[in-house]
Amino acid sequence: MANLDIEQTRNQARALLDSRIESVTALVRSRQRITELRDQLVAAERDDKRAYVQATKDGWSADELKKLGLEPAAVKRRRAAKRFAGPDQDSGLETATSIGE
Image (tube, rainbow, N blue to C red; front, top):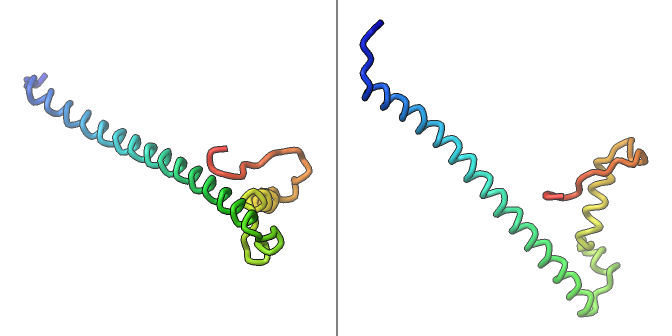
């Protein structure tokens, strides 16, 4: 059996661990970014709902807004869910309609 150098072996082991730590660090950063983006989406959807309500308070009817392509956000999500449900729409299966649900 060859003579093993303890220091060299420790350095090699550290290098292997460092590369593993780097990959898990990248994964954590990615997950943190997803969480931040989801939080931003929730805030944007809340702002959108408030702006829609304000537009109706300012005299715009739902029909007028719809003609402008500005349906309430909830309506858009329901339509998207129906579109992707496919032929099994009546099967009772629910489909996710937005991120985080």
